[in-house]
Image (tube, rainbow, N blue to C red; front, top):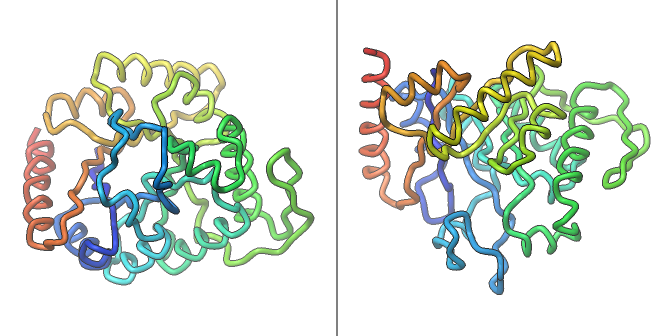
Length: 281
């Protein structure tokens, strides 16, 4: 199993390059940064924890592609991920260019976690009907893949339309897209346009049957297994081993949004203790 960390990089945290260098030095495979263009100040949609009030860092996130470019400049092997990019509310032509540019500058280290977004007011502010965000997500990913892989690309969908176009740079290698979410239809989206699944851990009783379902459905379709990146992963080594057996290739833990780089370093050291314990079996 590979191990990574997820982090809200903001204007109040240390620079992404500094945190990325500490992360790579401790043997972590990946660093994922979050994405919010803005947080509407008047909102009815509850946050991921069910509360209406959000932590301060949600509204202060850096643009993920800018943050990952800074992280790329201080590292050489660290996988640079979005965890997750709200691709449904982003223009796919501009996003394809930004993603391919980070991948190009980092030597092919970008991993794109994508989601449709939970903040309905944020989605609506981008001119997208929130009820259409899942279909828009699929089209945006398909359109970006066309731009990344075809010398002359075009797309004609319900949400995305553009005529034949050139777009460079191309990614160093195909950018893997991980479809995020835990909802009842998320595996349909993973199978339709993903290279893997990126749920948040909901406990083994809930997750293991769904991991088995993903494996069964890929087998039935004659496809290679689609790996899972598990966010908010457990720290228990035995649980991690069971998840690995079930198809989880990467466990990701959260870092706090503190402004104290020493505190982040202590958190990374503590998490590295878990990776070492896992390696020992």
